[in-house]
Length: 361
Length: 144
Image 1 (cartoon, rainbow over the protein chains, first blue to last red):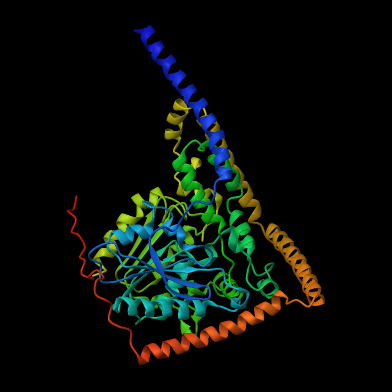
Image 2 (image 1 turned 180 degrees about the vertical axis):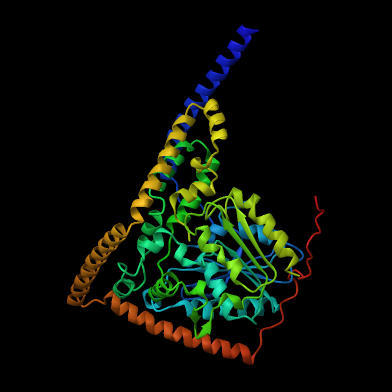
């Protein structure tokens, strides 16, 4: 018996060592392939660009079901990043999930603002771009109601739109990790304090705020993140599925957009310094953006380990709106894994579908 | 708005420092390299805690902003110099191109306004037949 157990243990150890050697060889082979191959394809769900205006693109995803829910869904992407994170790969795409479950999906995606668009402000984004897109969605679908979904800063824009259009066509408001109390931004709040951050000088000097500056600011939140990620990639280099997903998410994370200068100035002064979205004093395009104006059903999903939008910054949304039908869902994960990747497929999307399907008829 | 490199790992369910100590202990027994992974994860966590504490001070914020200002001023200086060189060769500068762009944008906006007015005069056609009916109803799920 003891001899048999010893043999089994030896075999197990042998198998582990063989596996380790095999993985090391695979890492080296795939490592060469990794650097030689081209960028992985993303955003593959079939779509049409139905409207384009400067920095704005409005997509319509082609329906694949025989029947659609009555209320169309309009996704508003954050102004700092591309929307393909929501359509990162077949089987792991939020957009594909919605389309396959019978929703008529539209999406606002942003291009880099051109130098002449440096004067775009919060009013342009919320009162002109979003309003314009909603009108087009209404025209195209023939439906008066629209569900608006906003991710991160897209959630802020959607929330401001909702607050300034209390009697508007908004049927449901869905936000993912949307910051409301900007005093709770941690490191960002310190770095952008009035005492040492001269936003006027910066914007006057550069026009649109360059993406590398924003990327550096975000990297500061996890200083060892890049090194740890590189090690993690090397460790999993033998795993094709991991490498493929890694490349897609890495491409997205580094594919940041510049911010329109005036927009950045307003965000810093009104939201970061004045915290006016939280206090209810924010005025956009002459209209009050008091969150208390929002009465539409609200669904807010936030991530437990979100190091970019901490819980304290996102928590007030549900508390401040006047909606009687409101849900806040706190899920495990981080800022991206809340909406994309394996965790989102399992945790967020089914719960969102349960909530939204009942409110889309 | 997300960029933290570790977030990429998170999205891939691979952020190692979030493993529970229980699962880490099992993993070590299975793969000898897991001990190294655990050590790296701990190190990463410690570096982040120390670095964010240091960076959260007013002194760091002041220094970072000063460095950023210097960098931007240098960029501006290079850009101004380039503008003068382009003028010397009778070529348009970035500002000239931007001002043309601005004029185009004004024209674009006018066109949008005209398009909107036209759409009001001639309302869009009824959605064409052949599109899926908007009659879908949620599937009632049995409560567990």
